[in-house]
Image 1 (cartoon, rainbow over the protein chains, first blue to last red):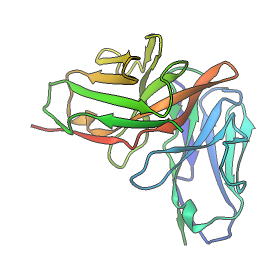
Image 2 (tube, one colour; image 1 turned 45 degrees about the vertical axis):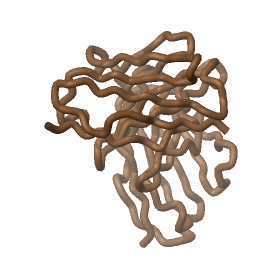
Image 3 (tube, chains in turn purple, red; image 1 turned 135 degrees about the vertical axis):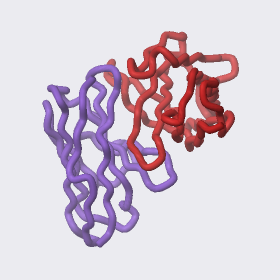
Length: 107
Length: 121
């Protein structure tokens, strides 16, 4: 299985701050990486697909980049409604695997 | 817009079989893969497996010996059975649509609200 790691595991930032999360795969997965947002008590929501493409309807303050084994997820200006846990997920190889998540809250 | 809804018992005894059904509304179950994903309380996400509308399946090797996913296209439903459950199988179980884009699947673009299944005597 492809192992996914994320850092940090949690972070606190102020409204308006730029927030960056990294995700690393245990082997080259090309750009076959998605990012999800999960708010407390809710199902995950697909935000970014193919490492850098914004899902329809997702605000443009969210972005993703990277390829191979190293990926980055960015919120350009943190908003109160962005409080959530963010997960990366690879779909290069079965079984699909997720990162452990990064919990984002407001300072 | 497609909607998914999980249903099934919220409490299962150890060593018994967990059974859940996902009903798809607002769209056809055809031409998509459909996955089950679980999340133990306070932990991360684990993909359990998927089924294509034709009935072909693929399971996570970590659960393969205990998992069966089936589909009923006439009812727009797909189901999960997990046998010989233990407390480690306690989790929120989600069903999700697994979209195909440019020939690749693995895009979970629609999810059910999730259902908590507790394994306890």
